[in-house]
Amino acid sequence: MDLARLVRLVPLKRLGLDRLRELFDSCITPEEVSTWVDKMAAEQVPKAHYRSIMDAIWELQKERPDEAVEYSGLAVALQKGPKKLNISKADLYQTCLAISGLAPEMISARKNSVELSQRPDRVMALIGSVIREYPEEETTGFQL
Image 1 (cartoon, rainbow, N blue to C red):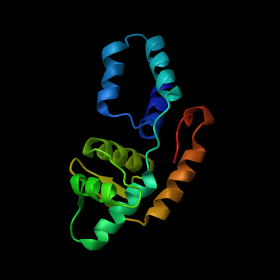
Image 2: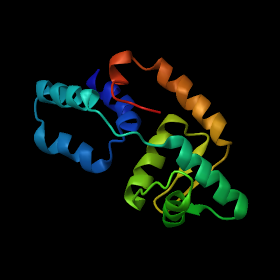
Image 3: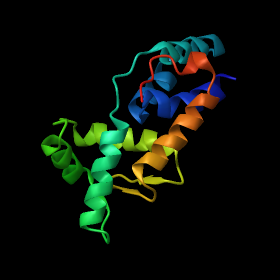
Image 4: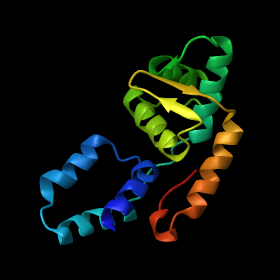
C-alpha cells in the first residue's frame, strides 16, 4: 500500500531521486517507511507554475519546431516572460518530470530538454482529471 501511495506522490510532490534516496537511507522497517510516506503526503510544496512553464515550452517549440526545448532556454524565456519567473534548470527538470508523470503521453521530459505533444490547455485538463482521481489526503498541499 505504501509503495502505491509513494508512486502516486512522486509527481504531486515533485519528489526527485535525492528525496527518494532519503527513504532508502533512513528507513528499515515497514513502519518507518509508512511514516516517511505519510510525511511526504503531508508536505506542502510551492506552486509549480505548470501552466506558465508549458506555455513557454509551447511558444519556444513554435519558434523552433524541429528542436526540443532545452531547460536553459526555457529558464531564460520564463525569466523574461510576463510573470518574470526565476526557476533554476534543476527545478525546471524536476517540474517537467512531475508533469510527465501526470500526463506522460503529452510531455516528454529528458535530462536536458523537454517537448510538448499537445497544447498546454489540453495537458492542464488531463492533469486536472488525473488529480481528481487521487485520494483527497494525497493532494494536500498540491497547487495547480
